[in-house]
Length: 422
Ligand code: RNT
Ligand code: ZN
Image 1: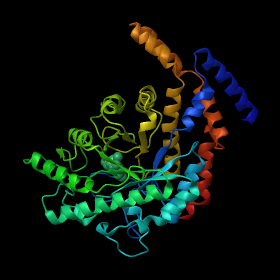
Image 2 (image 1 turned 180 degrees about the horizontal axis):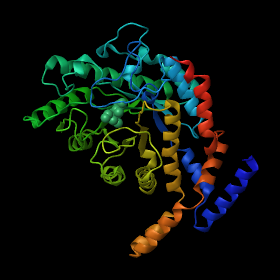
Image 3 (image 1 turned 90 degrees about the vertical axis):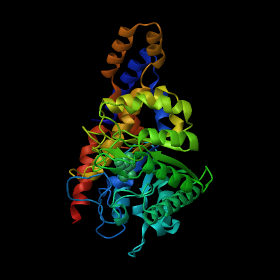
Image 4 (image 1 turned 60 degrees about the vertical axis):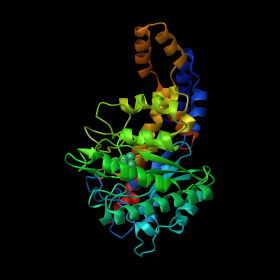
């Protein structure tokens, strides 16, 4: 399609939305202000670069598939991320895990990681003009194999992970300082039991104490902020997860840290969209891990499904988009990883744009008047409005390909780069 056709489609869409009281120009301006934090681990199946052949192991998360082309070095990963950034409208961030440091071929254990191992990332992020976020890595390690890290009853193991967490928070503070934008440090641990535990309270008490110890080290808020990620169950922790939703909700509320809600960490029919308003009435900020659970915490690539639409709607409607940090957390090794990143990230942005293109005042008016047909009927009408024309225009104005060019771009990159990897 010619550029002039995109212009025409956009003009028609602009008029159609104006008729229902929505200004598409303002929507584009608002979406431009929303950064997403892209997860570095999509590019290499959560492997990290602690050793040349590092791969995800243990810890209640799993990646299936062996599609060729995964990033085998940090340079390849950065190249892939640069490609991804070039195909996504807006300015975004990158979310790193401690296992992605530049360790120069030597074995640096998790209790020895330092800011210097991430100075290369800081330099790269400066060149890219993106902020960074950070995570301690509590899986794929011999001392995580027994299933317990910060809540371990073994003091040696526990202290090892406490040290790792403290160092990771320091690295986050370093990155935030270097880049002039606070890094969110997220703590997720895999601790739990496959079968019914006896001492439920014991492990949770230990976790509470470990977190107290970790967070007793303070860092300036403009360098780093903390989040703790809740979970209902994982592979091998079906019966009991120490860091459950209730545990972290209370912990976060009482200790001035953020809670992190991952779409895949709840019962299959629970919606994150319904949790945001409750959290935001009692907490200043919130971290999200946007993913696509399928029957379980499967971390499928995000697509524009109802969950994402509901999430976008709630993010826009609650009016606190600037206080909610949107991270992505999906990985699927059965398909082109760069494509997964691009399509998943674009889907999350589309969810937000669709929500912004709604006449919220009118919907609230129907709701308050008890006119529930009006609320439902208008919501349904919105679904067939020309959102795609606004999205394509948004991409064009950001110097990024329109929707129909995404797949060919990914194929070309695959042919020129990914297929040349072994
Ligand atoms: C696991 C959590 C966690 C991880 C990443 C890699 O269930 O969702 O956020 O996916 O830290
Ligand atoms: Zn997550």
